[in-house]
Image (cartoon, rainbow, N blue to C red; front, side, top):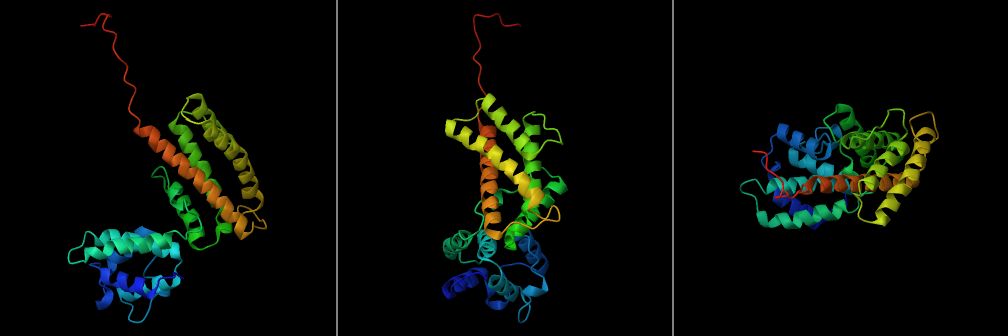
Length: 268
C-alpha cells in the first residue's frame, strides 16, 4: 500500500483532474495502454475496481493497494504526460514530481530499471519483465533464476558486441570474466579499483550460479530467504547499471582523429 498523505493525494487529484471521474484526457483504452506501458499493470484488473469503476476510482484503488515504488513510477509517468496536456495546472507538476521521487526512493531494488533487454528479442524482453515482476510482487526469492538467466543473456550480448567468443556452454562467471579481460586488455578502465571490483564480481557471479542451481525455482529446491535474495538482486542490478553506463559512455566517445603526415605523398 502506498503511503500517500492526504495533501499528496489532493495535489495529484487536482493535477490529473480526477474530480469528474476522469484522468487527464485519457479514454478507457488509452488509460489502459498508458498504465501498462508505464508500470506493466492492467488497470482493468478487477482488483482495481472501486465504487463506480471510473478511471479516477481505479487510479485511487491502484494507489491504495500497490507498493510505493510502483505508485511512484506511475505518478512520475502521469506528471510527465500532464505537462503535454492542455488545461492542466502546470504549477502543480514540480510538486507531483517530488511526490513521485519520494515514493520511488523506497524501492527495495534501487537499480531495478537497469534490467532492460538490449535487443528486440522477445525472450530477452520476457526475462526482463519477469525479473521486474518478482520485485513488484515483493517476492525476490521467486525471481532469482530469471535474474540469473537475464544476466547470462545480457553479458553474452555485450561479448558479441565486442567480438568476444562466448560459447553457450560457458557458465556466467566465465563469460563475465572474458568480458572483464577484454576491458582490461583494451585499456578501457580508468582506475585500478574499478578493475578490482569487476574481478571480484567474477567470483560473485560464480556464487550466483550456485544460488540459481540450488536455491532458486530453477529446480526443485528450497528457495533462498527474502533478505538474502534482495541483497543479491541489489548487487546484481547495480553491476548491470554500471555496465549499461559504461557501454553508453564508450559509445559516446569521439573517434580517434589521426593526423595526416603532410610530408607523405597524397595519392591523387
